[in-house]
Length: 261
Image 1 (tube, rainbow, N blue to C red):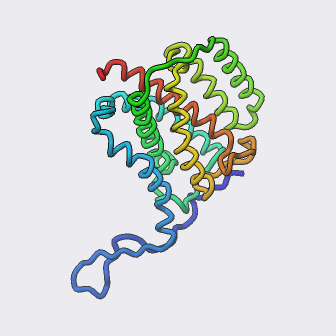
Image 2: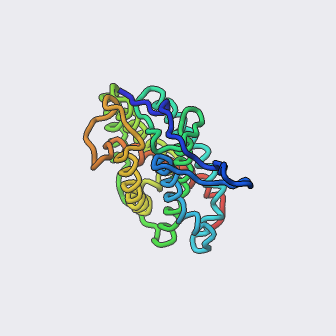
Image 3: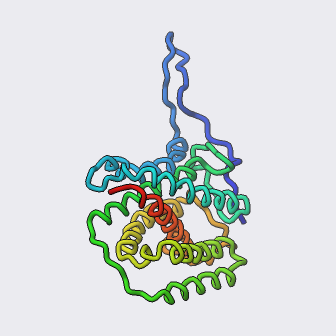
């Protein structure tokens, strides 16, 4: 069953206490161990974005020129995934451990979770620009039937595992992405740069998601997933992240075509 943590009382001690022995107002900092831990997810978001943010003005990738495309992609894809997040949280498919959160919520989601849908695309699309800068365009000569068969398999698996909410949604979302890519950006999924980018993105994914699931910051309802994990990461997370990152890139490329390099 879902474990709900938001209702727990937070330990006392905080920021901005006034020293009673002082004649003047003086801000003092009283942090207990719990206070430090409550910054965990927030600091992970900072860790995700700090390097790409620092190199955004770099003229080699010129990422700053594509911020409108980034904003468009985040506006479309993050909105959809946040709606998904709100829905599955309310259904109990996963929950968040208040021990590692600041306690600020928007639409019943931790503010850190919302920031995650900004920091992740910002960083991963920056990685894509670096891949474009460092490599030459090259494509696979795969017949479309390979992708069509993959779509059929993913959608069929989604139906088979429909009783497991997260499993089904993760599989179906991958199928939907491949359908969208075949219809609107076929060169993307046949590009070696795309698959190289995904492989690179899975490195920070493994690091961040291992932390999120090991502490755990995010907890999964056992009835909503297969059960097997890669380390502490549910296998569904690999499908979820594939679809999410790919959708970000799909919409980013759609808008970036209008921006000269």
